[in-house]
Length: 316
Image (tube, rainbow, N blue to C red; front, side, top):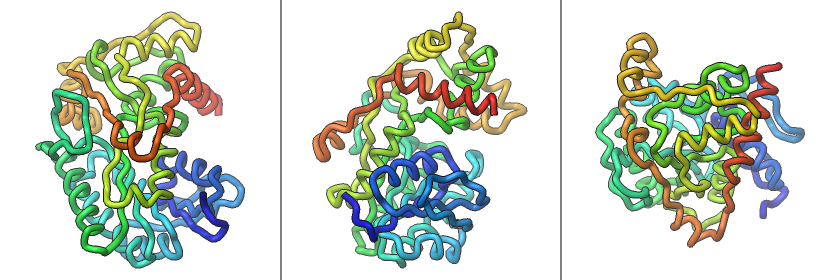
């Protein structure tokens, strides 16, 4: 439980993960500061808004000042990860350290590279693509800072996410956005491979717990997800919720290469195609064994809530 005097700072609060985390922290009774570069956020009552460029030492220092916990949910544009993520993360690390705050990184699974079994936290960081290597660098440098006594660190990892506000995910506009508009839904990769997805509110709950619990310190943790699901079953649930016939198509590797000629983001998906063409499954046993059960939202409920959000956003 929090105290009335603590301050939890969310960096990157304009993004889907950060904004969802703001709501979660506020619901848990924390004082919350929501930081983004552009400003203009719609926030719950009682949340402090701050506009800052946390990629600079000055901006990160100002944003982290007075914090008990800092959540690193900030990210450069997808195609700029290798060039910009290291300096961004270093500025945030220094800002959290100067504040004497615990630093919680919202991470993903890119550092593992191709896998042939469910992913656990003790896997080697075997990624060879640029985005995977930069994530591996962050995953090494922050725990090293923790071990050196420079800053308390915990890392929470998600798979591909979806949920309210998740427009920019791999199943965002191309699946949920297209479905609510009555357009053809495009599923990236084969439809028959089991895949773990992280529902944004579930991921936010896990990150908040890591920020509150000292047992998380120094570790990387897979936040629990609902059971793995194939693309075909995922789409069945989408169209069942909408009450419409299936209008979908799978984006093959060949199609991805062609589309990538004119779209840098689609082109970048080719680096991690191994996340699409084989089982990509999260094992969160270590989290559950340490912190207890954190129930994941069932797929039908999560998909219904996500469709409702996309429908509202479309009408707005």
